[in-house]
Length: 152
Image 1 (cartoon, rainbow, N blue to C red):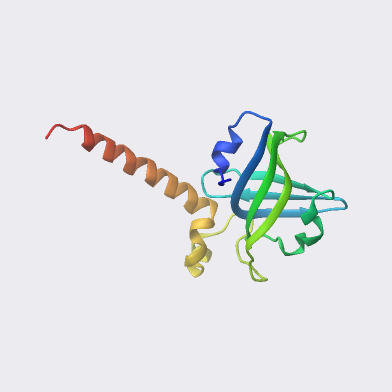
Image 2: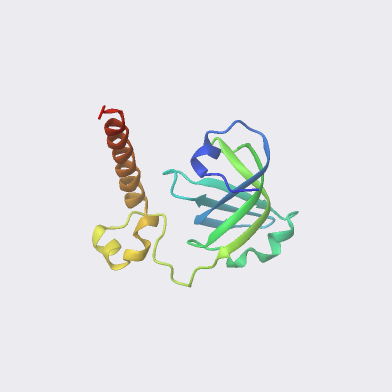
């Protein structure tokens, strides 16, 4: 099984079995018997909500899953019963691929450019730079397609 992009999963038909998504945790909320994680991989401005119930084997090991951690989630893509998202991933397994140090500076809130300059290695994970990179990519592809069609 290979990971799918968040943008494709958000547009996918549901339900789908054996879905794998890899990305960074944008937000993490844990309650009694259930944990919610918003996971993004840079392919979309929106993240995919990953829900881990207490029946999952990994539920007891979710304390290390914090904002900024790199994760791999496997489960079933279903229609979301909650407002705000169309689909969610009901995870059977969630693995921390890359933990994050305490005090990870990026949160879901808006950050100033001055602040982002101080953490240059994390800038691509911010929403602002993610949007800029997607626009730049689209422009580069359009220019390449245009010049590929020009007769030589």
